[in-house]
Amino acid sequence: MSSDSTPISSNFLRSIIEDDLSNGKHGTIVTRFPPEPNGYLHIGHAKSICLNFGLAQQFGGRCHLRFDDTNPVKEELEFIESIKESVRWLGFEWGEHLYYASDNFEQLYQWAEYLIQQGKAYVEELSADDIRIYRGTLVEAGKESPFRDRPVDESLQLFRRMRAGEFPDGAKVLRARIDMSSPNMNLRDPVLYRIIHAPHPHVGDSWRIYPMYDFAHGQSDAIEGITHSICTLEFEDHKPLYDWFLENLPVPSHPRQYEFARLNLTYAVMSKRKLHELVTQGTVSGWDDPRMPTLMGLRRRGYTPAAVRTFCERIGVGRSDSWIDMSVLEECVREDLNESAPRVLAVLRPLKVVIDNYPVDQVEEFEAANHPQRPEMGSRVVSFSRELFIEQDDFSEAPPKGFFRMSPGNEVRLRYAYIVRCTGVIKDESGSIIEVRCQYDPASRGGSAADGRKIKGTIHWVSARHALEAEVRLFDRLFTDPNPDRGGVDYKQFLNSDSVEVLPAAKLEAGLSSTDCETRFQFERQGYFRLDPQDSSPGRLVFNRIVTLKDAWSKK
RNA sequence: UGGGGCGUCGCCAAGCGGUAAGGCAUCGGAUUUUGAUUCCGACAUUCCCAGGUUCGAUCCCUGGCGCCCCAGCCA
Image (cartoon, rainbow, N blue to C red):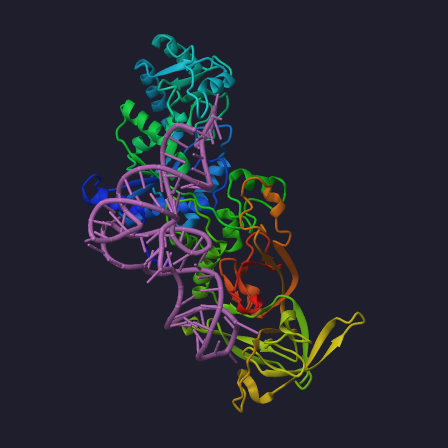
């Protein structure tokens, strides 16, 4: 992780930890990343992962991976596995510190009985609807349940029978006995346990009752000896409850909770519900669709873990609601790939070019640098012949002002090869250009004019008879609006109908025949690409565009 | 209209009473066989507003205004 390029900057969490360490409150820090295994991880989770694992790393502590698996009806083994895979892919390792809240179920159950015995919890028999009505509203105090003051023994017996599976789902719950008139809704006798007759992905069918998040999370933190329990802002209202449990239970430690603002990205949606919808409604091909902001999606697209880590560092950590510009993420991959990606010539939308004065059967080989700024990356040889492909965009019959690519009468350099002058075009019956004719300057071998004249434009090309054919997929933002997630409107109305463009017959330089999906390339003048790990096979090359190059010209 | 937060450049974000870091974006200009990269330069007399305390306030106090979160047997 030392290769990440953004300097570590100050934030409020680092300050807190520095203080706790220097004043001896803690000798070492322990954090945790606590996902619920009910879906795939997205870029927002990456922020939390980088924060928790990163803080532990920077301060010589450790970070646990803990599954907050208290709701068996939403959780699946598949999600547990994909989460582990995503965290590892991001570059973090939890070692032996893998935990499940569900492994604490017996202890939590004992603590629940303890609370009952202390008169601090009771078995509730009101229906879910009635509980809601009794809870009151934001501006009105709640009412106490008729079961609130029932004898301790009665609650205890009932709770044991709940555990034994004697009651159907929803028949009863266990509630904490706190304060029905608290202005903090979380303190109005929160539900601790509910009856769910469903098997659990991790602990199987051993339980009929399951603790709620609030009754499991803080205690799990305490059991694991977490020092800094870092979560998102919406849990701030839960902190008094978090602390209430830790103060009223014989727990081994009392972690402190700190909250930060969750990540929002422009031109994306981040809620699990909406991502799920995109998948199930077939808007995208799956959780790993290269346009998805999921870690699986970014990975398949070709993003590097280092780029995602740099992004998480660069956006900072604060407590104010923030919308990070997609361009920040994009710039992070470019930075990473600009350093490491070998350059290659590839024509995405081919236009045939014939060099009339070039010998018909002649083939020349030119040396091309794999990375002009990094000679140590070596060079390769590219074949040149009379018939080539160039990019359709690199030719204009009636060029706009400032266009310095190929146009009739103008000279342009074919990268690494020769300077050519366009002499004419051939069109089909409908008037579209199907071929461009040129004359080359034999004295410009390698691309430099013998007389030293300056050539402004350099374009890429591929020799027609040597070209490799490939499918290339150009991905763009999934949404047309910077904030599709804003309230009041259906985010689906902002779906970008052009978020993927498939180019079926791109022409690549021959050397690309033997590459693998681990290598990211820069297709010169176009962007960064890599083989799609899913759809590519030895006989069929499918490239994904990870991100474009910056393009000052197209902006004009 | 209860409670909890937040408000520093277009987007993030440092700053912790001593006179506004940095990144992304944007705009100039230089170098360039990628209109990329790299490099230089510009970019908040001002920190939501109004009062107050102070020699001095983005930082302290008071009062406004705006935005976000909370009424799951979800996490």
